[in-house]
Image (spheres, rainbow, N blue to C red):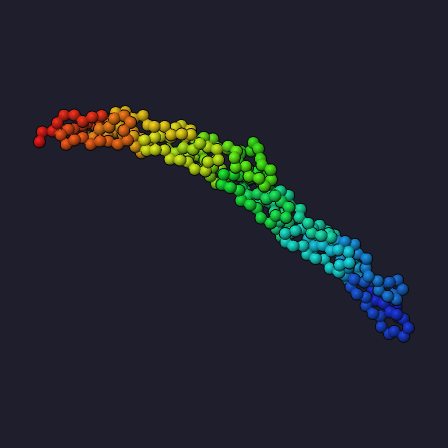
Length: 248
């Protein structure tokens, strides 16, 4: 009787053909089985050399394809798993995904996108965080925290340029906070600094505005509060002094 594929017999009075191992193939003549000579990236099983699929690998002589770790990838017929992510991407589930806005990654075998500082934004390629408006960028992974980015009167907030609140100021640059003006000051146009209120006689500078003094009080220019008249004197609205007398 003729042997079946991938079996062998020593002949003689043998009544049975023995099956070759999965990594073997019956030799011509079928007197014995020979080990398959598979190359790197192929696994010897089912009596043939099988190409390893994506995200698996095998060395010559392996009898199966080994799955890559989730942080690595491979092409067809791979002998090892490699990292192929570009700058601005990270590895996930044997593939590369783009880092979200205001995060960055150097690529390679990185499995995490790092968050930018509040006074930074990620560039278009997300390989680094930068602190300017696109006029320049940092080398991958280097944060530029010294570059002046905000105009005077603005601060950095949530990776963007926030306009100041009323009666506050900021010197700009990489400032993340607007400072509040004194009560007798008002923020200057542009809000790069605070200017002292120029109130006239009869007005007091507080709450960032010039306030008209009520009856029986007075104030001189530059005062930050009203002074009450003595009980023997009176004053009109917007008075700079107390006058007259009251008959008791």
